[in-house]
Image: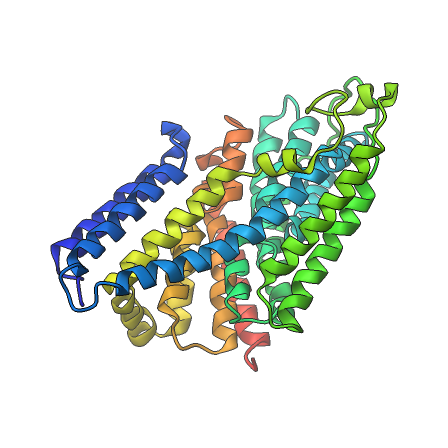
Length: 441
């Protein structure tokens, strides 16, 4: 049933546009982004089901909803395990210890600009671009106290580096994760994007570094070196083993990656049980334990509760909204125009530009639902552009939006916009390099 010109289709489009407008203005309205898209998803599918209720295929809608729910459930369980591990490492002071170690070094501003950028690039493929950006932002804010100009430009660099680093790894960004879980690109094939990602980061970084002073930050009262808590290194090893398990389940056993992640999460829970049973309160704990409970033992269920539920429910709303629009028929029309008339290369470059305005998650969900007939090179291209295109504007990626909140007043939309031409140069060169070196895929 083609509903693209029907009132159901028009109302559905308006609902999605209205809901996503509220998502974009979250910083100003303080309305959590999951709420409008979840509401819109429910209404869109209710309208579709109402239209199909009197047809000869009333159960087609229910089957479609089940398919999209299965897709979301796999993504949800994968991210639940990954986020719990990241929370566990945070609770064990892994990221605070890294920040403490960096802030105690007497590097100048330009050196710290490069260190935080390079660390962001290589951390984001493992712990995702959003977490990486938040950790590195905390570092530059501690170092650049009283120097908002340095904080602003360093945050731009961190956003670009984190997004570029996340583009060549299935674990670095939601868009790459979705493509990998669909089985479109194998795990090892993503690393063909490494050099284009390096170019995407280095070109704007080299231009921006010229504006960073070589002076050293003013001396501040030194804080005690913060050390990681007991079990931190073993949790990091468990996380690496969990990633290997997820990849092995997918590549060798042909099982969904989320099953490997959940198996690894079980390993963390058993280790958490050991830490809890052997926990003893010491003066060392009281001094360095961290934000949560001065003397409370490690609890994996507490780390599960600290997962970013707003983000997970936002993914549910987006997947169901875009799925509803696809069921109506809009995505087939869009795919026919973009990939049929314009061609895959131009279409995929446009996807990156759109992701700077709309955010890459709904854009990539739409591309996956269209499922255009493309070779591996073009699927890698859309993965690259959707991942790094969000760096063009501060509102184009979760990392940029989060840093605007964390470094409020020092990293803003216009701070980032000032360097958009340099970022766009890196964006264009990374696409050119990918088309040059990966044309045989």
